[in-house]
Image 1 (cartoon, rainbow, N blue to C red):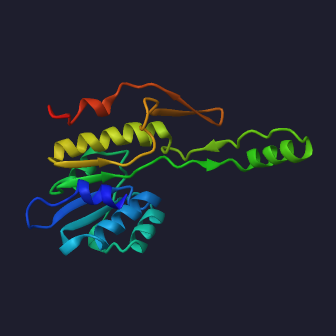
Image 2 (image 1 turned 30 degrees about the vertical axis):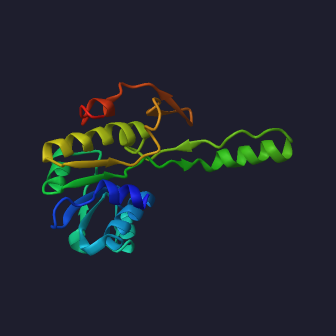
Image 3 (image 1 turned 120 degrees about the vertical axis):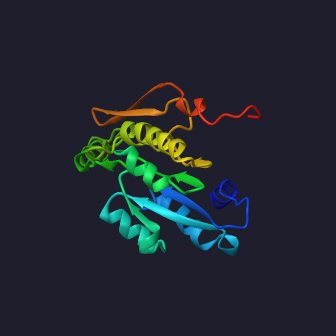
Length: 196
């Protein structure tokens, strides 16, 4: 991951490059932020972290962010706030992701099936917070961030995600299970250059 982030955000001139990390309070985002802040040569990159919750802000501070390096905003709600956060940034590293939580009763059912009935248990059921489904965060939220980056004039955009690594990008929670459908391939319609 370090090589990806540093390669994608390498400076062109001698000036420090400002890079916005969205989802910077999450697991991957805080790692990217920390590496950009602490492991770049000659202070060539000035990371700014975007976080939406108090919990994410706390994680971002733990990753070494100062008050000036934190922007509080929801990357899935307002294009205007994203454009404002991205203005003046040379690059954006998108690290937002829908985060499921296990339904506790599904674990009880799974354990009962496995150890009392002595049969294959299956998988636990998951749920997502309101406004935090894969469709809202990984699809619509990512599209909103990409559109905002284009409008803000961002030159480099790194999309870090396990969702979207295949044609089955759009996930939906149906009866406690994540189901996928094939959406239009939006990522392949932007930023493509003649040289590939």
